[in-house]
Each structure stands twice: as structure tokens, then as C-alpha cells.
Amino acid sequence: MRFLPVNLDALLVELDDLPQTLALLASLQAEPVHGIEEMVPAARTLLVRYRSSMVSRAALVAAIGARSLDATVERTSTLIEIPVSYSGEDLDEVAQMLGITREEVIRRHTGSEYTVAFTGFAPGFAYLSGGDPGLDVPRRTTPRTRIPAGAVGLAGQFSGVYPQASPGGWQIIGVTATPMWDLSRDVPALLQPGFRVRFVDVTQRAAVALAPQALVAGPSTATTTSTASPAAPVAAHEGSSLEIRSTGLQALFQDLGRHGQAGQGVSASGAMDRGALRAANRLVGNPSDAACVEIVYGGFHAVCHGDAVVAFTGAEAPIEVTTASGLRHAASGYQAIALSDGDGVVLGEPRAGIRSYLAVRGGFTAEPVLGSRSTDTLANVGPAPVAAGDTLPIHRSTRGAIVGAAEQPPHDLPTTHEVVTLDVVMGPRTDWFTSEAVALLASQLWSVTPQSNRVGLRLAGEQPLTRSNPAELPSEGTALGAIQVPPSGQPVLFLADHPLTGGYPVIGAVATHHLDRAGQIPIGARVRFNPIQPFEFDITP
Picture 1 (cartoon, rainbow, N blue to C red):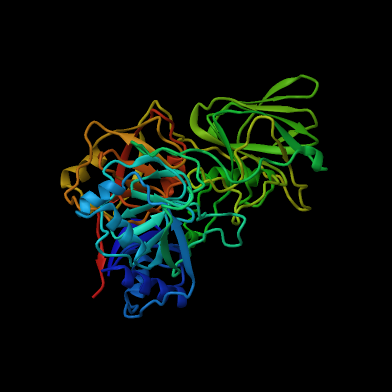
Picture 2: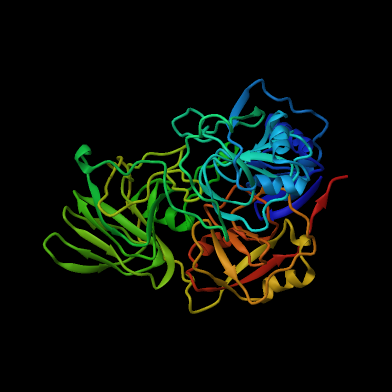
């Protein structure tokens, strides 16, 4: 085993192959190591996130390194058959790369039984191993910005089905109408680790019932949609509520995230500035993990029906309250604000930072999805985005809920006027880059481009980062704060809604203590990375 640094609370265990990875995962699931919070298996790695206050890295390396990798992980008896219309846009290109006919590609793809090795990238996306070894093709050089739901693809020796429309770089050979992800099922993901899978050719049968959607090449982007319904109207709720007049650029329900769903390919998501969310909840007397409304770049206006206590934290932005009688007065962030029936509150454009958090005493009644009220904009999981015209019901506050005293806002919120410095932990794939690229990461300023969002900050520098290792990286787990480098050499800083796994090397990660700050960086800001430790790894005897 090789242990690679990921962050101050995460490491990557690199093994020889998939069977070893699955054997280690099974061992750690059967006999857990104290302090491990989540594990993400991949082709030949296991991402381990741990609580550093409970176990040190050295102790964790010793405990994992002592595990045997000899066990064979048995497949389940569950067999899922997936009907496929082999009409994918890359089918002819795949056949040409392999030197065979398209009919032979189809015969090989349907002639083998697959096993769900692991999940990742998107909810319900399963990496299927064990197919014909001759179907080994690289990802596309330029990922597509949109691949339709149900697309069947190849990448390396894996096969997979896109559960929803999303960006992606796999070679698309067909399409299926079988839903991979359905929140109405007790277990939303159709394909679970260990399941057996067989593809069935239905190309000559009736057309697959899918709306035609073009596959578009180009830089990856994310869209903000949702699987849940808007908030219920106030008429069905007896308590207080907030009527939303405007939301600004984006307003989403967020809490501390939906942890523990990696087995279904679902990442944690959650608030971009978790410290600000916790502070907002403290101010109104809520549990620290209660859902707030995360507001981007201000422009938010709400009217209170009934009485309520609210608080805004996060970005430094003006707040104005208009009473029912028409009187206006300024209010401050990081303190509780009492609203009476008919009072309106407006959050203006931030002077520093970009994300504000609105908490209300008692909490919002948004329904949880997979145990969390966070809206994941990449995975399309969680409550619908808050929209103008919505009415957000408020839970009645419980007895003993005490409104907190005003708190001190952060003094160093990012702006576009000065360089934002972020501490970085080097790894896990620093050694895939030239020494010049490693030095350039820290010495060069990186501009935050308009293509940035909750998935990640897309950065641009005068000189791209060049790799010393041109090989294709098998998909592996990615952590919050990871600095992934695609073929363009212009890095992407992964934020709350990043994919669970990725196929481009990660040169480093923003240290855990600067993640909240990264979530407040505005478009157009300049970023400098400050490595706080050299790239080092451990090898077990």
C-alpha cells in the first residue's frame, strides 16, 4: 500500500488493483478503525476521511497497513439486466480505436457479465468491472458539457450508465430507458456495489423512450435543477412564514450536508461557508446543523407573516428592515433581528464575500432528501431552489431555544481588491506534475473565472500547469478543496457540490481551515496558493 496525503483530515490509500481495493474496503467495514468517518473506493484507491481529533495520520496508516488484502469479495446473487439501444455517438469511433466493427463492440459489450465495483461521479453512477478486457478505451480528450440521462459509456476497462443529464468524458456507445436513480425507491440507486449487471441489445426493437438530447463537447459546466417540489404554500401552515419577493442570483436551502451516502454515489454537498451557517443558527437559537437559506451576491427580499427572529451571517452586506407601517432602518449582520407581521427585510449587494446565510428561529420546514436539506446543484438532489413568490413556512420554536448574543463577523472576507491567499496541502498526485508546475502553483496568481459555481472555482493563470506523467488516471475519490488539473492545465478548485470521484490528477487541496474562505471568493478575485507542507507519502512494508 501507498498512503498519499489528501488534506489535514483525509488520505488516499493506493493499491495494486480493484480486488485489493475491495478487499481493504470490506475489511475496514467489517472491523472499523476508530476515527474513520467515510470511505470512497475507486479503481485502485480508497479515499479515507477521518476525524483528526480522534486518530492521527500515523496511527491510521499503521492500522490500515496491517490489514490483509488476500480476501476475495463475493458478488451478490442480484442480477440487473439493462436494455440498451446501441446508437451512441461514439460507437463508430470506439470500433475504429479497437480495430473491430461496431457489431463486434456490441457483441462484446452484451456478451459479458459485469459487477458493480464502486459508485461515484454522480448519484446512481456505478462503475462496472469485469467486462470484455478488449473493450479498453480512453476517455474523450475534451469532456462534453452535457450527456443525456441513460447514456451508456466506456472509460478504460469500466462501463457505466449516466443516471441523469450531466457533463462527462466517457465514450458513449448507447442509451437505455432504465432509470439508474429514482428517489421514490427505498434505495434510490438501482445499482449497488456487488450487484451483477448484464446489458441486453434492443437496438432493433421499439425506440427507447427518451427525449432526444444532443451531446455537447466543451468545458464542463453545471446546471442548477432539483428533484424536489417547491415549499408548501402558507395556507397549509398555521405558524409564521417568510414570503419571498426576490432571491438575487441564487438562493438555496443548505445545512451541513448529507454525509454517509457515498455508497450511492452521493457526495455531502452542504453550506459553502459552514462557519457562517453555524453562527446564523446560534444567533437564532437553532441546532448548529439546521437548514439556512444560502444567498449569493445579495438581492434578497422577504416579507414576514407572523412574528419571527432571523439572522444574516457570511458576506458583509447591507441589511434594511421596513416595518409594516413603512418605517425603514438599517440592521446588522451577525446579530438577531426581530420581525413582526408585515415587516420586510432586504439583503443588499455584498462589500466582501459573496454568500450570506439566513437563519430563522425554529428553522424552515423544507423536507429532507436522504437525510439532509442541502441542495446539491451537480447531483440534482435536495429541495428546490428558493424562488420569488415562494412562501417558506417556519417551525414553531421549541421551548428553551435561546436567541444568542451578537457575534463578531470575520475580518478577512475575500474581495476583488486584494489577493486571496489559501493554504494548500500538496497531494495526492503532486508527483504527476513537473517540478516547474509544482512551483508555478504557488508562485503564480490565479484568476477566478465566471464559470465558477458551487461545484468549483474555475481558475485561469498566465501559464498552465504541465504534467510529467501523461498516463490516464483511473477514477479515484475526490475531496472537498481538491485542486484538480484537467488537460488544459488550468486548475479547478472543488467546492461543496464537487463529484465524488474524478479522473484528472489532483495536485493539492485547500487546507480544511481555509475551506470556508474559499466558499466566499468572488468572481474576478485573484488567488494565491500557499503550500503548508511538502508532498510526502508513506509505504507499508
